[in-house]
Length: 116
Image 1 (cartoon, rainbow, N blue to C red):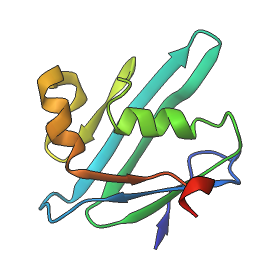
Image 2: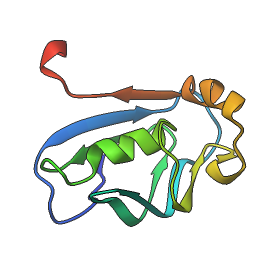
Image 3: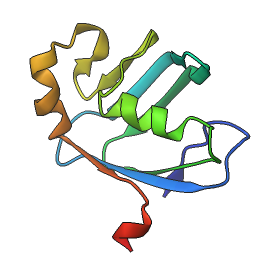
Image 4: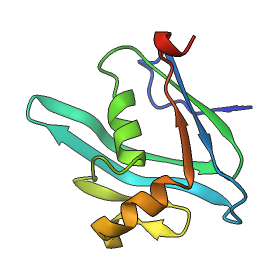
């Protein structure tokens, strides 16, 4: 099991699971991704990769950027700088109509008390 450490601020658990039978080495790659809300950065200059079949745990306190990262992965938000590659799709070149098909290739599980 590999752990993905996003920053030194990390201590709560949320997890994600990638990818069903795809033949890409890196299923997810963030290249210098930044996203800023009107009150401050959600993430700033973030880069990481997730390989095919990996379980990745993303942990951190409130305000560390976990939800922003998940929204970027799920294409609810798009990076203001940098780009995200999901399998063979680059966020820079995505069309809105492609998003539902890309989401079908992802498995994202949020830790939530209602699921326990």
